[in-house]
Image (cartoon, rainbow, N blue to C red; front, side, top):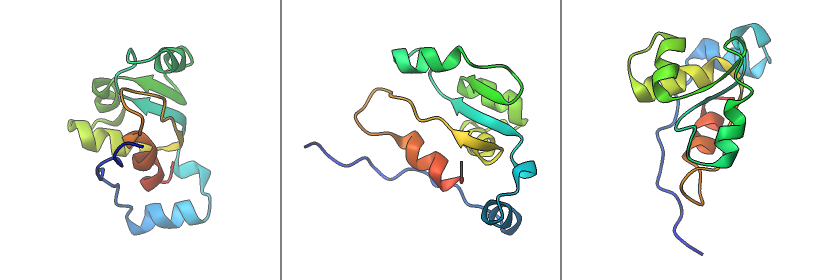
Length: 109
């Protein structure tokens, strides 16, 4: 059965972000789909990287998320990118559980 995944860093939404999410304000999320992480960890991640278009589908490494968001913190850049995204990808990685899944959900993506 295995162990449950440890708690991840949740994303805290401010009042405006929460209101935009509740009202489905698309303008507040200009990125259609995003993922920031090690894209070479699995076939699923490598396949996901092929749809990156540099505009509204942003798939790349943590350093790329820092560039796209203008945020120099690795964890904060990931959360900022998720907050800008309508959908967040959580492809298979190294483990049977996914931090990414819970992180993108906490950001409303």
